Image (tube, rainbow, N blue to C red):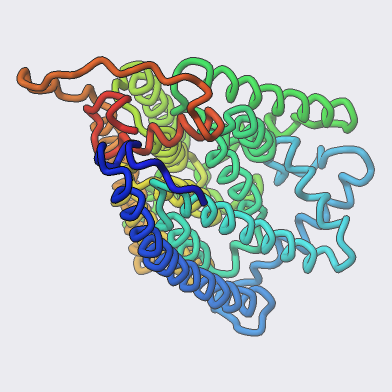
Length: 474
């Protein structure tokens, strides 16, 4: 490692000999303090991940059992059944439980490439996706200006959802979305491509593009996402029958029993004022009958209003930092979740993943939001699978748990939107007594790193001083 000359920035001019000596004395301090702290954090994170995932695997494989039904049936019965149909070159046209974009076929077919049974192969793929998301959060958290808090959110949030998380393919989609979001700052085209891939599998990862700053970064990421989504969708539609047939299964859906919109119907049912039916419908347990059409319209209106607010925010935001894209993605995903007619328990892993990405940046506005989401995850485990039968029957105790969970999600949504709005308002004017000097132009050759990294670092350096000029942030 070369020592900087004594006259460079950070060393008093005119102290050539002493400046070099001072740099020599300081270097061992940096090598002994900072890495040791990081090493301890990495060791704690690694040990926690191994311990929690070991417990999770014991639950997944049935060595340890939780009350409730068989949560592996979705894999060995439904997914495996779809796998058999997809192998014939057609989508499950006659199966209304197929509610997914055509890219989901790639995930369903993937376990067939591994040598084990379909169920075990699916678990292996989910475990790999979990580990990759953890590795990406760790790698990002170790960079200058970033934080390992996001990795801690992932370590804690995933196992709090219980063994169900390895028996749904949502953890795979979430890992793709985490990779895409983390790539958006440095490599917007790659980030857009990954989010587009996630979008053709399960739509929601495309929400990660809502907060990209206007200009070249938005053009590159949005174009890559559109290209990935369109090309994969076209290839699947051209090579297989019924790629978009799932869209016709949406119009007759009811209100899923775990959704926010189901709560007033549950209360009416407890009071004896609702005489509809609760049954398996389009792949989930839904409420059908009186009030359902009205509640569906209210939920749809909430979605429209929520995304209308997001567009207003995007066009009026005046101040951004490295966390803004991630914060906006979390706000959009929360709006999408709480206004949906369906909130399946695995949806919480989406929120945990995006919240973890937000907390990789120290200047994020979403820290309290992430805590509220983490508080909602164990309640999700309680309502499914522990007391899911009582939720379906609208038993007061189970509905109380569901109500608290859904209220936490509503609080997280409102809090996320409010904090995002406030964090991007126009910066206050500088005091009149402050004199700003014109910065000297910096030649491109002066950067010792790639321009994308320099851009990210400039954002990170300005997080704590949003009113500072760009030249003062470096």
